Structure formats: structure tokens, C-alpha cells
Amino acid sequence: MAGPRHDPTLYRDRDAVPIRRALVSVSDKTDLLVLAGALADAGVEIVSTGSTAATIRDAGFAVTDVAAVTGVAEMLDGRVKTLHPKIHGGLLADLRLEDHERQLADLDITPFELVVVNLYPFVETVASGAQGDDVVEQIDIGGPAMVRAAAKNHANVAIVVSPQSYPGIISALDAGGTSLAQRRELAARAFAHTAAYDTAVASWFAEGTLQDDGDLPTHLTIQAERLATLRYGENSHQRGAIYTRAGGHGIAQARQLQGKEMSYNNYVDADAALRAAYDMVKPAVAIIKHANPCGIATTAPNALDPIASAHLRAHECDPVSAYGGVIAANGTVTLKMAENLKDIFTEVIVAPSFEPAALEVFKAKKNLRLLQLPEDWQQERMDVRLVSGGLLLQDADRFPDDIVSVAKNWELVSGERPSDEEMENLIFAWKACRAVKSNAIVLAKDNATVGVGMGQVNRVDSCRLAVERAGDRAAGSVASSDAFFPFADGAQVLIDAGVKAIVQPGGSVRDEEVIDAARKAGVTMFFTGERHFFH
Image 1 (cartoon, rainbow, N blue to C red):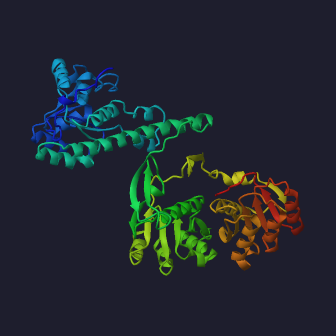
Image 2 (image 1 turned 180 degrees about the horizontal axis):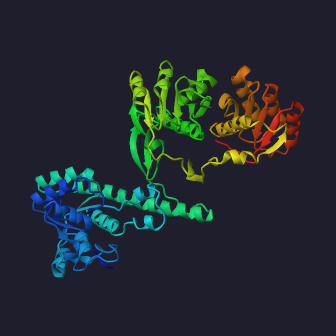
């Protein structure tokens, strides 16, 4: 039987590793010259490539081009420059082994003690809207190879993938070298960095496949980085944290402007609020409690302050439940809206922006959390939900941009075709219903909810709940149902309350009974042929 690959007696102490030679190649040049200056002052030889070498040289620091080390000029438009034994031998040599030192000497290869590399801006390129070859060209090959090689050999090499780690390296120069603990921590960050990068590339290709042939990806990798540890999860005995996903542009990327630390439930409700408010084209506000809307509204016609108007109309739907709610606005939060909220206890407000005067008003409510969405906020194309032992993936439930045109093709099964104004109200109710937990019933008037029934185990109870909350406002309202009525009893509850029009998917074996009930009452009813469950 063969003996061990390496003779343990050849290993020597490599805890403190002085930095004599550094390989530097970065796309993010933040604080590059600060680091280069410190390396130069410490007498470290800097080996570099392309624009990084030019930047260091232009600042007056000595730099050795990679081509001078390898003896081979960059080729294929820069695709090949560091993929060479003179580079990777210097990265991977384990200098605890005399045989590795001997081989380096025989091959005239000088080792590196520091590698500073960050990768081509692939994620940023995708986020900019670029497509095709423009994205493919930002897939780094040599960079990840160098990062992984140095990280594997962290016993001998310190690998840095972010400017945030520069101060630690500069301190190590003064201390006489990097410690093993420091190099190991840097290696962990490096492997996480390349894993996230590879995940972003794989996800982009998977989405491209999805667009091309309609298939969901065979393999799905989700890479996320912990943004913050939360005080607890859904309940106080559960741990909780928020993670950001590479390429994400949603509630996890929102910037908190003021207020207490966000909780697990705050994030859940804020995301639900976005789902409700951002379906609307007109200025709109949604108020959420326990992931369900207690009010959604668009602005009143000719309102002087559209977003403040939308908020007041949403609040009127259920003022009791709005206490302690989470609010999302699809437009700038104004001074008027802030003043209207002075005496209403609110947990979170999410918006794309806030007027400076509104922020001044909110300062008096120190615990109120204000979240500003990123400028490139967008609804996700895919929904992912964890289940025990795996996850579920589906297309995000979105409404078409031309829903007004789509609504013209809804099947009118009872009553007369409404006016354009009434159709707009039905479309509003149909959109609002998607944000309500199933079984979902929404009653609306003038593009504002007046009654919401949600989360019941049968549809007739949701109808009763929506009517009860609407009270007298149910008369003359329109209703939407996220799925078909299995019996006529649910629709009858709405009809008896004075609802004048109903929009629903249709498709029940008892559709004729439901239609007949609407016809007898002279109630308009549309079938959309599409449901919007939200579990």
C-alpha cells in the first residue's frame, strides 16, 4: 500500500507569512491606490494586469506586468493572461513542503504571499439591462481561478476579494505578515464570493433558458448573503435573519431611513404591501396587517395630493385593522400624507421616495420604520417557497400591462356591459383580490376597497366577512373573487348585500347556478377564465 502523499515531517510553521510579492487584479478599484501605496512602502513587489497595472503605474508606484512574468502577452482580447504555470505555480505552491520549494526553484517560479482580485462586474451588467454577448463577456474565468487557488492555499497565501479587507492587510504589513487565522477568514470570504458569482451566472443562464423554451430550470441554486440578524423570527422563541439575494431588487434591498430595527414580521408585511400597491397604475396605497390588506385604494379623481388621497381612502376601508399596520405607497410620500398619519399608529411605511418635509414630520414618530425602495425596484419574475425537504418554484403571478384590453375579452355571463368607469372599478377589484389571502373576496367602490374577506376555509364565509366589514357601503359596490364560486350561496351573500357587479374566474361545475342567481337579481357578472390564489 502506498504511503502518505506528503511526509508530515516536511511541514513547517507557517502561521505568520510576511508579504513580499502580491498579485493585484481588480475591476473594483475602490481604495486601490491606498493599498498599492502601502504595499510599495513595505517593499512588496506588485504584479498586475491591464487597467489595474496602468492605474498603479500612473500613480507613480512600481508594478510588474503579468506578461513579463509569464513571457506571454495577453491574448484573445484579454481572455487569457493569468492562466499560466508561472502564475498558478506561485499561487498553489505549499511552502511548508521542501519538495514544492525545490520545484519552484527548478522552474524559476516566485511564490505569491498576497492575491488581491475581484471579479468582472457580471451582476452589475445584468442589472443594467444588458443582454446576450454583453453579459457573457462579463463572465470572469481567470479571476475565479486565481481566487480559488489562493484560498485553497491559505496556509501560505492571503486572498482578498473586497476593498473592505484592505485595512486588515495594511495592518498585517506593519505587523510583519498575515496570521493563519486571518488568512483562513479571508479564504472563507473568497469561497463565498466565487460561489455567489457562479450562482449569479448560473441563474442568468437558467432564466435565459426559461425565456427561450418555457421550461423551468433543471437545477436551481439560490445564493444569499445575510444582511442582518433580527431580534427573533415570527415568534420570540425563533431565531431570525434577513438575507439578500444576488441580483435582487426588492424589499430586502430597501434602505431604512429611520425607526426601530425591522422585525421578521415587518419584512413579511412590507413585501405583502408591495404586492398590493404596486399592481396599480394610478397613485395607490395599500395598508397591510398580518400579510393581508385591510385597505387598498387609488387616488380620488382630481385630488390635489394623489398619494395622500389614496392613503385616506385605503384607511377608510377598515380603520380599526389599520392600527399598527404596514403601508406601501407606489409614489412619493408627501407632507400631506405624513400629516394625515400623525395620529395613526403605523409600524412601517414603504415607498420609492419621501418628501423632505414628510421626513421632518415622521421624526416625531421615532419608532416608525421608513423604507425607501431601490431605484431599480422590480417585481420578481419567479416565486420560490420553501417546503420541508425542498422548495417550490413558479412564475410570479403578475397582471398584464394591457389589462384594460384584456378585460374587454372577459366573458359577460349576466347583466349588461358596464360603463368604462364601472369597468375600471371592476379591474381595480380584480387586481386588489390578488393581494388577499385565499379564499379572497374584495368589495370596491370608486377604486377603493370597502370590504375584504380573506383566509377563510370556505368562500361563503369570506363573502360574509367582506360584506360585514363593508356594512352599508356594500350596496352599489362591485365584487371580485380570486377563484370560482363552488355554489351559488357565496355569490348570493354578495347579491343580497347590494353588490351590482361581480368578476370571478368561472369554471365551477355549478357555474350555471351561480349565473342564474346573478341574472335573477339583475347583477352583472364576468368570467375571466383565470384565478389568482394567494396562499
